[in-house]
Length: 414
Ligand SMILES: Cc1ncc(COP(=O)(O)O)c(C=O)c1O
Image 1 (cartoon, rainbow, N blue to C red):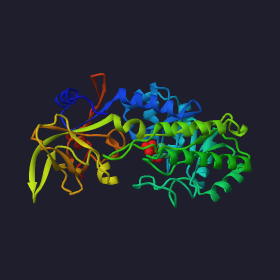
Image 2 (cartoon, protein in one colour; image 1 turned 120 degrees about the vertical axis):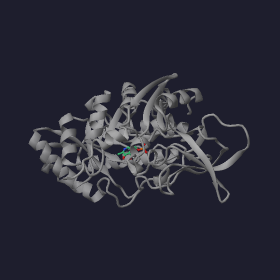
Image 3 (tube, protein in one colour; image 1 turned 180 degrees about the vertical axis):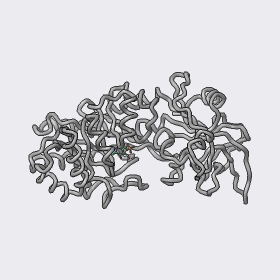
């Protein structure tokens, strides 16, 4: 999805470049399309980590979906955006005591424990606060979807979740946790999956595992959570997730679920992040100049991987386009930012008519894992603004701290 060039030019004029922009209409369409795909038996909880912009979260909260938070900061943001605590799930490794205290205190719908030691700490905190806490176990089974590029890591040893033997021990010994009401499971080990059949098969196996553990240890199934992972195409030639195939597969699962009494009241949840917001966002930079080096053409731009680290971090470039393409033949072009490192490439080799200084370039699919997955302090450049657009109307969502504001928070010693 790309916004009209007039809108992008106006934002550049008002807020300067680089900037991030999110198309709220596109986000709402994605939510509607996914709702229709998963059908009434499955719920959607937006993974806040994909993009925790307060403005974007406010738009998402109004659609009525839930959210998954991974820290007390995300909890705070989601609550401020209007998500009721009961509609929140909490999942994330290495939750500190302060995180757990905040999540328990807020009364979120379910907290997913990531391992035995977290259960111990949760029990101690719940006992201290005099609360009963709804808990699910995040599981790390030996099977799962392999990732094309490592994000969560696929199946195997990892910091996320309980290996099955330790989950079984925790379930058997759950009387040791009188303040924790264990009632569900979560499995998530692969992100950016474009194969709908693999997602359906994974959900089927997760349900089977959850039902088996629930029967064996007589634990209720309030929630079964399949995690996120619904992918988006970043590069030419990649096909988008086939929503028809996904929808048909989930409808089949839903009718199987309807025959299992134990699952009758179970909330079945997907926690997508990327799928809902990636395509609705663009990171827009201005061309500072061009240069040639040993036959290679460089478009030098005023933004880079300090604001959008993902291409360098994951090793997948995002498509880059000229906001107003110049006439003339396309040429291979490397889009490079201002950082003093050769990894600072927004695209190593894209094709476009040669841009001129002053032109705007837009990096697509920047709505997920963009603004907050980056490293804006590196090289002390100014930070980008975040802007939201609805039907041509423009709203500033985040006024970024200026370098002078950041300097004002540092101190000379002695
Ligand atoms: C627990 C959890 N849920 C959901 C997500 C969202 O994943 P995606 O953006 O691939 O849908 C993540 C991403 O890291 C996650 O860690």
